[in-house]
Image (cartoon, rainbow, N blue to C red; front, side, top):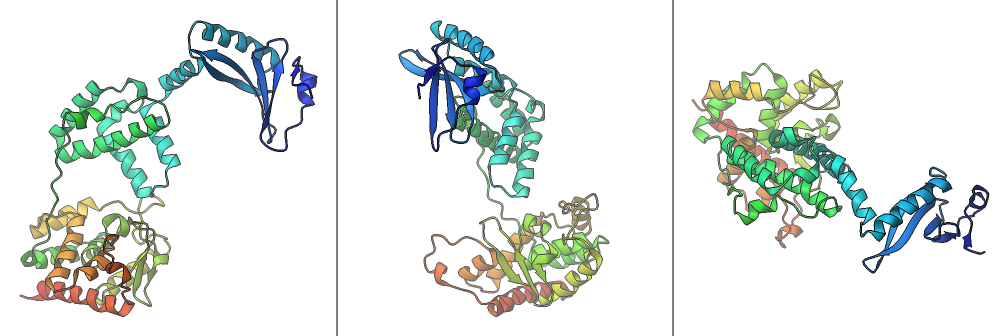
Length: 387
């Protein structure tokens, strides 16, 4: 078939898609106008002409959404731009960029990445925390000077806040660079100027001589969900996000097992429930049996957030300043104090042992885990019941 012909509605409607790949046809009226048909039946117009001695293909649109007459009209404009040294593709990208906001880029990034709901919410929260007034700003307008000034402002609120919010901005702009929306990431100025704050690894735990006061304050909480949440963190060493998103389908009260699905290191993590916690979880199940979440929110179908008010009550009543992660750190510290080997502590904490070749061969039996996790519970109980 002759690929050079006068484009008409009748001729285009008779074109058949190839069995594979694509075929191009050429308009005899507007010789730089091409038409491409793919094996899926998509028909699109384009112009191909050299720009700075390199072929430049500019897609106009698909037929019949764009008429033949409109395609020829657009072809004339594109050819005129190219003759003047203007890159139509770059111009189109700039127009798109002018209307693409910081929030648009973040949402596109989240859509394309396989992230946990907690991570998605955390990224949105951090971006809003540090850059709420920039969310509707064109991504192309964000420059190094703006980031330097904002970094200084955020540092006044706290070095950790400055670091965490800027990291989310960095990954958002890195994505924008990767998909060709911007040429470089302006957050790189922070590395060049050595302005990233050094992270101090936290080592705060609940002191052993304060465990009794802390435990009594937790046990006195009226909020049963907050009470069990804090006790699980201390007695089982779970991450806060793992406990908050725990579902009853992953709690086996008969076998006394909890399985955390798809954890931070992308594995499932099963631990026996310490004997001490069994009654607490059983009573909570009776209270929340009609809900999928172990710790449901009172405001909707989602799990509850970190119970800030009950935590403040525990701090005030016990005099122990702590965070949920301090409970996990205390669990690990107690495990070491009772003489558990590091391989067992890593297993209990669900820490990856990628570089530990020997550790990779160790398969810990359920009953062994049950024994050691109850030893940790016994240690805690000894501290909180001694007068």
